[in-house]
Amino acid sequence: MQFSEILSSIGATGDECHVTVSDDWLQGRATFGGLVAAVGNEAMRRLVPRDRVLRSLQTTFVGPAGAGTWRIRARVLRVGRAVTLAQCEVLDGDQVVAVQVGVYGIERESAVLVKPVAVESPRKVEEINEVRFDPERAPAFVQHFALRWAQGAKPFSSTRSASKVFIRHRDPSPLTESHIVALVDCIPSPALSMFKAPAPGSSLVWMLEFFEHDLEFGPEAWWRIDSDIDAATGGYVNQTGLLHDPNGRPVALSRQLVAVFG
Image (cartoon, rainbow, N blue to C red; front, side):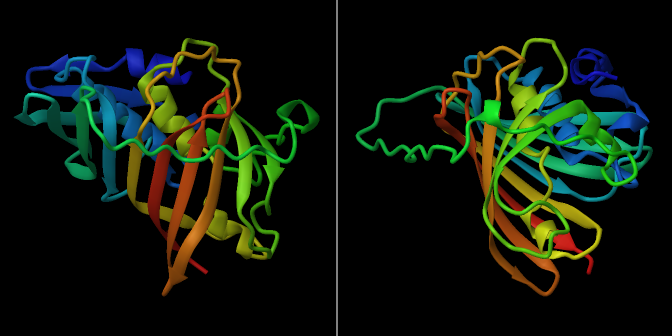
C-alpha cells in the first residue's frame, strides 16, 4: 500500500478510528515507527483545526505494531487561545503499541527569534546514486522511500560518523504534514553504523519538533536529514536529527531514544 492510501483509508467507528496496514510496511516484526506516528497524528488532526500547525509530536513506542488493523483513540486534552494539546493511543488488538501527545499552535508575535544555521551538503543529490533496496538486508518498509547517502557511515560498516542523507517518499501523491512525520524516521539509526554485522534496534521514545511549516513541495523533491549520536550507554542510544527542506532550510528537529541489541 502507498503511504497516502493508508492515511486516506483511516475510518471512524464511534469515538475510535481504525486503519489497516499491509506487511510491506514492516520493520522486522513491527511496523515502521514513522508510519505509526503519522497515523496517530492524522487521528489527532481530525480533532484539531489545521490553522493550528504541528509544533511537537511525542511518541512513545510501547510495543510492536504488527501488520493488520489497528484502533486509534484520540482526544483533545486542552484548547487554549493559541495552543491545542491532543493525546492518542494506537492499539493492535487489545495491546497499546504507541502513546502520543501532539502540540498544535498558531503563530504568536515574540521578541525571541532564533533559527538553526543551514549547513550545505558536501555533495549534490544529483551526484549520488540511490541506495538499492535489498529485501534480504533491509526492512520491508524501506522500499517505500528513496535514499541517497551524501555523507557518513552506512549501517554495519563498523564506523561512527555523523550522516547526511537525502530522502523522499516514493508515493507520487502530494505531501501532507503526516508524510513529513514519516519521512523523518525513514533512515536507520546512526548507531547501526558501529556494528560489523546486522543487529536489531528499536525506537522507544521519539520527539519531533517543527519550527517551520511551509511543507508544500512536490513529491519528487529531495529532503535531507542530518543525524548523529549524542550519547550511547548500556544499550541505549540518544540521537538527534535535523531535517532540511528541499530548499536547504532546517525545518524540524528529531530526538530519539533507541534500544540497540548487540
